[in-house]
Amino acid sequence: MRPIKRLKRIRIHREGTRTLIVSFIILLTITLVLYWGIGCRWAFYIPVVIGLFVFFTIVNFFRCPIRRFGLNTEKIVVAPADGRIVVVEEVDEHDYFHDRRIMISIFMSIFNVHANWYPVDGLVKKAAHDNGKYLRAWLPKASSDNERSMIIIETPEGTEVMVRQVAGAVARRIVTYAEEREDCYIDEHLGFIKFGSRVDVYLPLDSEILVTMGQLTTGNQTVIAKLK
Image 1 (cartoon, rainbow, N blue to C red):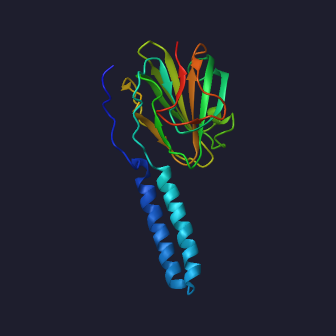
Image 2: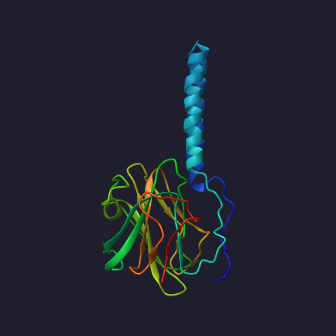
Image 3: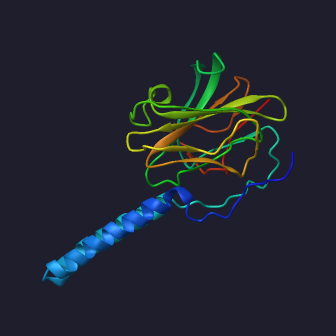
């Protein structure tokens, strides 16, 4: 397959630009009001420290590290997100495959980087978005009931893999960059989900699973499975 074509050196994700600017203005305004309104210097420092903590937590959330897998990607499935493995099980998939698949789910807390990566090299066959509820992302019904996107990727070997971005109780916006009939590659950004969410990967039953429940993952680095 041809070389990576859309990898960019994004340090703070573009999806966070507006949020960071608004947060900074609000926190700065609050700080100035407290500075002029509180006579006690020590009382002023407390909200300033809290405000700085909140702001840098948001900065960390929108941080977008540039990662290269660096190894042979043939038949390899990498983690599409930072987080923790919350599901590894066989499920009935009803939206596209209509058969049994292995589902691997990665839950992202508000402290994780929320950029998403493509888990495999291939061709985007389908990209769709469904509006839904905002259940807590770690609940089993979140995959079928919450706002979600669905991306179907066909690998060079002809295997189809589904990636599903799932919004959580706090997340209110799913961003997907995948476009149908376009090539995609490990190392490229698939999308972004704001403030707490999960990413599900659906694989054929004969896939070799290389992660376990509760394991921490690093997006675009942790190998979660190998396709047959």
